[in-house]
Image (cartoon, rainbow, N blue to C red):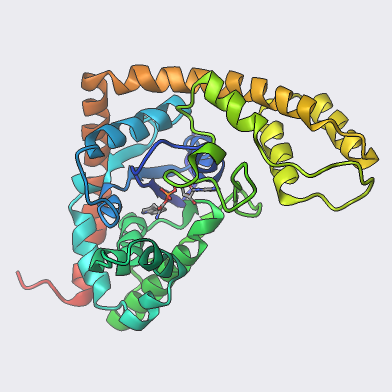
Length: 334
Ligand code: TYM
């Protein structure tokens, strides 16, 4: 197939098991885009260092995240699928972008403020310059489309600023402007099952459905999911219920979704029945991914080949960009 001209780039931190938020917000779109576009997807192991004191689990997490992406349908032969630390050009571009990144702006980034609250004793410079590194990831391939969830919107805004600033400062159009992408739809934000916040790799694990969850864990978590008391015909749908419908849409046939939606409208919905259908659908959806991911994770030879092949493709693209950037800056004396 003739590829479209836009370059696609995205990344996931290896800080825990992937969950349905990662799936809806990111991985599903990676798979949908891999045939039509030139894609660079990576495991953001350097970004993970901003919050990890303990790195003993890193190897396992990196391999699990890679295996889970592949188990969801990502094809390493169709895209460049690599580890961030295997592409040292990332760090070089990060350094260049640090010259156009302002401390005051970075201090105002909501994700930075959140992290300061969460780890007041480890407010390292990596946390502050997290968006600078992310801009480098994206612009290293001069990507314009970035499939991500809603929580990454601000980071994309910063990446656009740096692209413009770099071009302006050095007087050359090296970088295009990257945008968060979800096929023209609103960016995904999968709320947690308890209705408080979003699904997350490390927080509120009972309210997050992981692609590694056992069948029993899935059933248990869904049975405890928050709903409303029901019964008010025509009442506006609370987020927690809308989320159950969103999840149901992924795994249930149209007529079943329509039935529960009609029941909701009529105020006669039985959440117990809906949760049972949702749980069985989720088990059917997650179980094969979980099993495939475990097989892939255990295949050392295959994973090594994926990482090497991914890094080679990513470095080839990175090399061109770094040359363009150095040339624009004037770092070209020989
Ligand atoms: P991370 O690892 O937190 O999340 C990976 C992807 O999953 C999406 N996501 C969600 N989407 C919808 N609902 C949720 N509850 C939910 N939780 C997570 C995220 O939006 C993301 O798309 N900074 C990034 C990693 C990164 C990156 C990049 C992304 C590093 N370099 C370059 C894009 C481009 C992060 O922490 O994602």
